[in-house]
Image 1 (tube, rainbow, N blue to C red):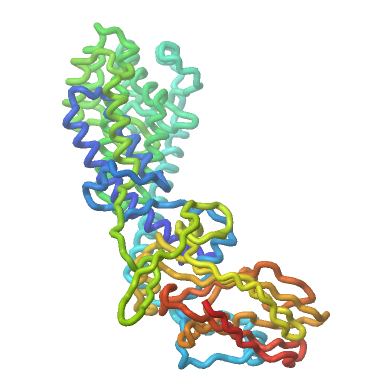
Image 2 (tube, rainbow, N blue to C red; image 1 turned 180 degrees about the vertical axis):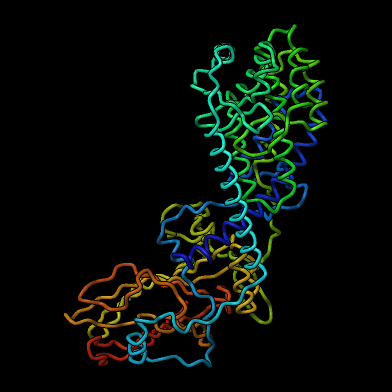
Length: 568
C-alpha cells in the first residue's frame, strides 16, 4: 500500500498540483489586473470576493474545457482536463500493477511450467529479496523536496498555532461590565447570535479575532484603559465583522493551500493581498452598522490603532489589523468616500461571473489530425500505403465495460481507455485436468497518461509514448476437472507476429494473483499486456503459449503446454 502511494498516487497528485499552481498563478495576474482596472467601480467587498475564485481554482480536481479559457492565451493547457480518481479498486489494480521493465525479445529464454512452479515455491517467503535497485530521477527528487517542504511548513504552522492557543488560554477573561455591555450591544446590532467570549490579549497589541469554530475576541489591557465607549464600539464592530464573514476560516483554507503550493511565490503574494482586501471588506461591513456622521470617527480610531498600537500577524488563526502603508492609504480613502458599499452590486456580480467563466475552465486545444492515430490502420499494396479508417460503432463514453469499438471511459488515475478493436475467440481447449477457454482479445489504448508513467517508459525502454499506451486484454476462463490442486499459467508467453515475445507472468496484470485451481471455474480472469514494440495496426497474429498443467503436490506434469495461434 505504501509503495502504491509513493509510486502512483503521490506523483499523480504532484502533477495535478503543479498544473493547478500554474493556472492559479495566471489567475492571480488576472485578478490584480481587474482590481486595477475597476478599482473605482468595484467596492471592497467585491474586490475581496475575487480571491474566492482563486481558492476555488486551487481546490478544483477537475474542470471543463473551454475555448474561452484565459489559459488558452498563455498556450498552457495540453488539451486534457485533470480528472479525479473515480474508478473502482479493480480498475486501479489493472492500470497500476503493470511492471514496465520486463518486455523481452525473442532471443530471451523463458522457464518451463515445472521450473516456474519450483521457483514459485522457493520465492513465497522472500519474493522481494532480489528486486533491482531503483534509480531516482530528477522528477522523483523534486517530489521528495516538495513533500519535505510541505511537512516542514505544516508542522511549523501547527506548532506556532498550538503555542498561540496555549498562550491565549492562559489569558484572563474580560469581566469589566462596561466593556462587556458595549460588546453585547454591538453583537445585538449586528445580529450575531453566537456566544463569543472577550479575553485580554496579553502581548498581542492589536485587537484580534482568534479561531473560527469557537471564536474569541482579544483586547489588550492598554486599549481597555485608553479607549472611550465610542472607540471600543468601533473596534468591536470591526472584529465582529470578521466573525460574521468567517474570515478566520477562509484564512485557514487559503493557508492550507499555500502549504501545498509553498514553492509558488505568486500565491504567497496573493495571500498577502487577500488579507489586505479582507480588512477593507471588514471596514465596509462594520461601517454599515455605524451612523454616517460617525464614519470619520471610525476611521480616526482604526488609523490611530494602526499607527500606535497595531502589529500585523499573518497567522491563519488570527484576523487582526494590518498596518501596511499602502493598505492604510486605501482604508482612509474608502472610509472617506463610503456609501453603504456592502450592498449587492450588479457590476460586482457580473465581474465575478466573468472572471469565473474564463478562469475556472481549462483551455481547449484541438490536437492536429494524424492519419496514423488510434482509428486508422495501414494497408500496403504494390508499394502504396493506404490509410483505412477503422470501424467505430460507438464514440460515446460509458461507465460499464467496453463492449463496442470506439467506446471509451475514464479509469484509474485519470487515464482515458478506448476500445480500438475486438477479436471474439470463444474457444475451449481440452488440456486434460484443465479446460482452458479464451473468450475474447480486446485492443485497448490508454491516453491522458500521467507524466511519471511516460518518464518511466522512457527511462527503462527508451520509448516515447506520445501520450499513448497500447494494451492487449485477454479474457479467459479456466476449469479444473479434477479434485486435485492444479497449477497452470494460461498465458505463459505471448508472441506477436512471431517476433516479439512477452513473458506474461512477469509482465502482465491479471484479476487474480493465484494460478492454483481447485475444482472450480474462474470467471472473467483478465490479462493486460502492454505492447511497446508493435502498433495495433501492424499486429497480424498472436501466439499464446500456456504453461504445462502441473500437479501442485508433486510438480508432476499431467499435460504438456499448448501453443495457440490466433489470426487477426
